[in-house]
Length: 460
Length: 107
Image (tube, rainbow over all chains, first blue to last red; front, side):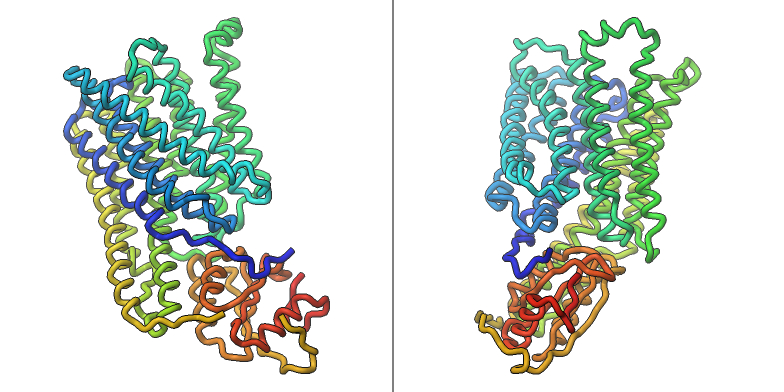
């Protein structure tokens, strides 16, 4: 097998991924401002609307935003072809996702204050329509890839699983949003929220990190490749286990299995799920530990932190399940917030910040290098990656991120420090945004300078 | 592409680089550095652990051609030549088509 001079489309315009990458930290900043503004009310209850707004700012505004931008960039690199209509679809999806997330935040926070319910209703409807269109359009653009015969690519397999998981996460989410917009539907919010949270926190978050790690870790840190067999099997197992857990949660099955006192069947399924998650963390940490060139690189610490957060959340969950939630210990609600913080902020956001610090400098380098080819003599204007985001800046980012994670978790148990935790989070996302923005400004100014050099026209 | 008799051209010089143990984007930088130094009568053989699709697209857009082959020492071998250097281009194409490959070494 060889590839001989195929016409490739692997470098989408830099504006496509960058618009998603630059917007995402702004939602992180907004989430941090909410924490500072609402203070200890944030951790009052899982059903608290402010908490729901905060969760969706981070999951839709940050995680999904970066995921979509990264897929526009990564899929062509992996398979040699663009996502169809990528320029047009990105230009529509991005503002819809921004509108949807902001509307949802306004609706949730408005609902919490109890004021202006018509106002909240309008924004629930706007959020529903925007997110439905954004996600449907993105799903449609991915469909040719997902139904293609590109079975050799691990990333295509993982994306297929991720797509199913995302449907099972977003489906109930959108249905609940519809029910908020039209209160007459009268659905059981708790049951739907449980399914939505389970698929979102465990399914989407873990499989997203699995897909990202399988591509980014070997490429940027020169580790051995992930075993295709392991990752395919593991992703399928996680999908199956989550399907079983969801099925057991339905009223029909929970009544059938009610004879299993103390939820023995549930426990067995949860043990299997825990083992899957711990295996993935162990396997990836081992690959990172065995890399050939152990160069000092701050960004790898983000991946380590992500995996350690996953292991910690599994261990904490077992402490909780084993009954360490008595009157002297932390309450169930505090455990739930700790787990959510570990999975969203510790696992997903850590890995995503690590990814952004690698991918944005790389894209800037790649596009300027390409431009410089046609403008001989301008090569000195192509910055290397460390000039875009320096090691010193990445190290500081890691310190800021780790301290904000620790402070957020402590604030769940000591609400008096919520504002300090919010401030730490604000600085973390502010630092990230300024680093990325500086990179984009370097790109823009160097592009102008490169274009000033005479262009060489190639005649084939 | 016109067919040339093997004897009718001088054997081009191979520039060799193994980037399989460099982290991204070092392979990219090293290969481009070599490409910028490549003269007429030369082609590049790269050993790589990945198929560097963005790199080869960039090369193709800028007047070079390439071929990606499964490697023996590393997972992939990439052969790069300048399209304008017609005798080297013909040599590379012919070598890649033939089964006996003295200079270029696909699996």
